[in-house]
Length: 155
Image (cartoon, rainbow, N blue to C red; front, side, top):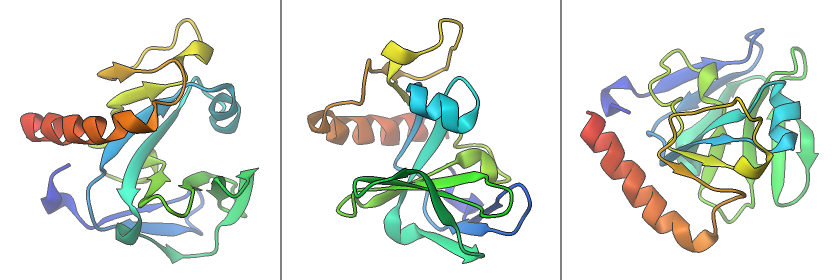
């Protein structure tokens, strides 16, 4: 994503919750797991991993829905119930934001796709890398570097 497009502002469907992003994503993803299919009422969910300190809710108070655990919590608008973002384990330095909630969709294209073993047979994405489940933690450093190179090549 072009840094000239920042900050990026987004909101839920009804506009009661607004968010701001001050840094480009470190990775973009599509998740094909059955949980994301149910949460998004679609074939997969889209995610842009945003550095934790570059993401803020600027209006409203999201509520937790979907996953309520210590390792993953989904946040929603309490009025329109739009799935806004996911906070994973607090030790991870990023927040998974639904990129289609922002006006500029430049970073909604998934670079990786996960949980393809649960993928609907007709669902296709332009992802460069695919994983039958979630990628092993040892692969993330390489994926983040590959994504950064991919973004530079696209610019």
